[in-house]
Image (cartoon, rainbow over all chains, first blue to last red; front, side):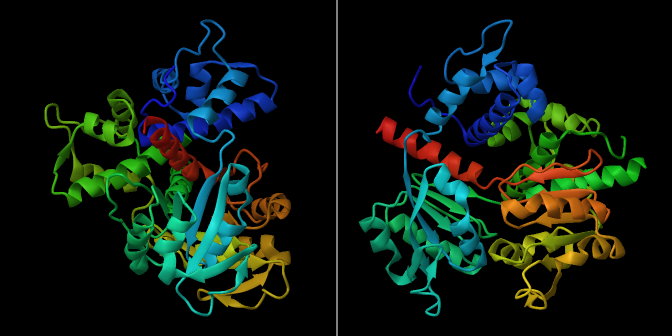
Length: 214
Length: 214
């Protein structure tokens, strides 16, 4: 099995979702799961599930499906989550930034915030969730000095591109962007945009189908 | 074409993602897109894309693919986003709640926050992003009185289940949960959990494959 097969973005996201589904099934006492069951839970086709999981070699035992415990050990390793700590910088200490700082899920999964920046002088020096907010003017140097690998952008849309540029200058290789704007980054930097509306849109679908079928 | 075919959750989320990809392609001047191109952008199989889009009838013109403008008109209609306004209650006016209140994307897509609740007496009465924060004790009655359809839970994990119960009692039919905990809701209520770690996990994958292949 190759240590790091090249899996495209959406495939990686599906691995995270498989992992959650596997934890749920394990919690219910299951030991094996078929590609058809995983497909049903995530509304994919069985063939898609088999293809996603085949990146790591052959796990399915014909007749019994995948061994849950085995997949739960392999997937975090593939995702680079196992025994690993990623150094993260958060830019923007407003409401969203503060909410992200307080979010426990990040640290639990090995993402440790090593720096928080803001350009508002009233916010610089404050301590939020145990982190002192630093002056954004030195962003690139601090990020480089602390060997930070991931940047999270939680600033207003107008400021986001400049922040992105500085993170890249500081040597960051991956960026998670919460600002509702498309950013440009060089090809060696992985950029992910988070769009919270996607979640609400699925509720909208559900509600309108309710009304239509009533 | 049925007005509201029954599409499962993950399929609905993919519709939102197709919509974003179609906007991007249109911005680049494209008029048609093949299932193979959409599949590549979202790393699905062409068959999966064709299946997702076939819920609404036959759109593909063989040889040319799907007409982008047509799909961009149809998908929002299916998602219940077209010419529609959803009445939303937000529970929790802490950092995350305040960030969500300030998020413009919601209103642009027809989600209008009609009530904000908090149980902290120091927060009740404050105005956040134009909304006065109300006492959470009356949640169910206010939600019912204002005919609110969607509830957003942005409270600490320990308080989330009780908030969920009150939203349901108030007649809400769909809930978006940001608290990092699994909630129980009756089957007629649609519950979506948002897990921000999924996004960071995909960056982790990218960074570890960089290190491995260097």
